[in-house]
Image (cartoon, rainbow, N blue to C red; front, side, top):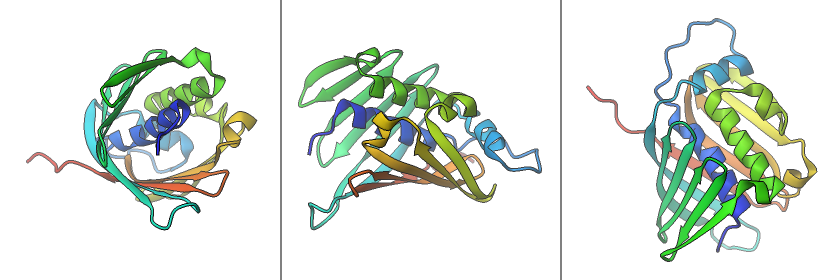
Amino acid sequence: MNRSPASAVLSCCLLVWALCSHAAEPVANVFDVQRLMQLLSMAPEAEVAYTEKKYSKLLDQPLQSSGTLAFRRPDTVEKNMKLPRSESYRIVGEELLVIRKGAEKRYPLSSQPLLGAFAASLRGVLTGDAALLGRHYRLSLEGEERAWRLDLKPLDGNIGRFVERIQVSGHAGRIDQIEVRESNGDRALTQITMPAATP
C-alpha cells in the first residue's frame, strides 16, 4: 500500500518526537505544554528504531512495518523503512525526498499547503515551539511528567480531511507511543524502541 507524500511527511513529523529521549532532568514543578516543549526541544541528533501497525476497516489484519528514524540538525529527518520493503523518506529544508524501488522523487513543500503545514509542525516540535504547533493543532495535555499524553487536533480543514487527531504518549522527554486516528476511521499505532543507555 503506497503512501502519499503528505502521509510520508506526517509520519516523519510524528516519529521525530521519538528522538527526544536524552532530554535533561526536569527542573520545574509545573508540567504543562510549555514544559513538555522545553523537554522535547533538548533532543540531540539521534537514530531510533520503530515498529508501526496500520489498522484499516478494509483489512482483516493490520499492516506492520519497521525501520529506523534519524534526526540531524538543523532540519533533516529521515525515515528508513526496512520491512516489509525498503523505502526512504527524507525532509531537508523545504523539500521532501522519497526513495522507492531505487527511484527518487522530490516534492517541494511549497507545492502543496498540506505538505507545508506538516513541515511547519515538524519544525515546531523540533524547536519546542508550542506557538507554531498551535497554528495547526489544538493542543491538550493530560497526566504528569512521569506519564503524559498530548492530544493534537487539526485546526485546518485541509489537514482535518485526513487526520482526526494525533495522540502522543510518553514520560519526561521521551516518546513511547504515537497513535494517528484518520478521518476515515483508520488508525496507525507506532511504538518507539530507544537504544540502550551507554554505561
